Amino acid sequence: MQRTHKHIEASQVTISELMLPSHANFGGKIHGGYILSLMDQIAFACASKHSKYYCVTASVDTVNFLNPIEVGELVTLKASVNYVGKTSMVIGIRVDAENIHTGAKKHCNSSYFTMVAKDDEGLGMEVPGLILDSKIEIRRFLKSVHRLATKKKQKHQESNFEVEKHIHELKDHKVIVAYKNNN
Image 1 (tube, rainbow, N blue to C red):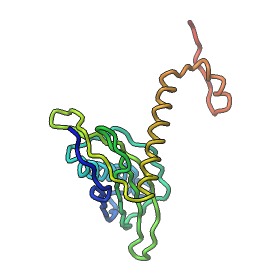
Image 2 (tube, rainbow, N blue to C red):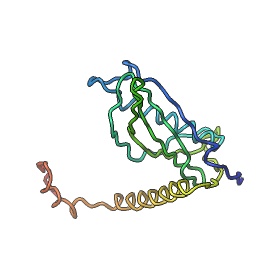
Image 3 (spheres, rainbow, N blue to C red):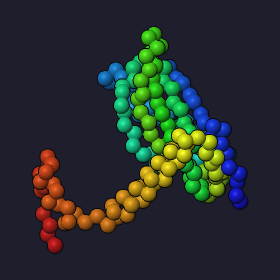
Image 4 (cartoon, rainbow, N blue to C red):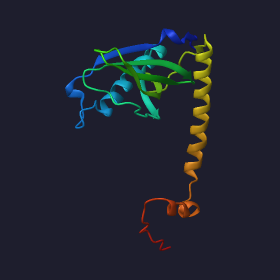
């Protein structure tokens, strides 16, 4: 069943949360795993809002922690549907932190979560298309297309990866090869 197209802004989600001492790691910074959990929650909310179905996380692309988040900072996560396939959506997420005393803001990370819409039996469900209203929305959609193509090519290369053809590359790394091929 073909579902209608939707404007991206109709599914955008923003959440803010004050970072508490209970969210800190042993180094006194906010634990990356906690931030990843928040990112997964907002990706779910955005994808479910767009598709009107329960959604599951299929993959997470590139989470680089650019700046540490401190206890007492206000973290804001913004999620937007960047791309849709038949049953999947790429949700772009941006994480910023704000020092509530000084007002200084910093970008902490951006990531892309691929979410899949599911029905009650766990079958993939077709999601609405997108109406691209701006140059930035077009850019985000096309960048997602390129990332997906690169990912597909990389997956194919990994499935055909032969150790013997690349073992010589290990000489450039900090490893000792103790493996002996006893064919």
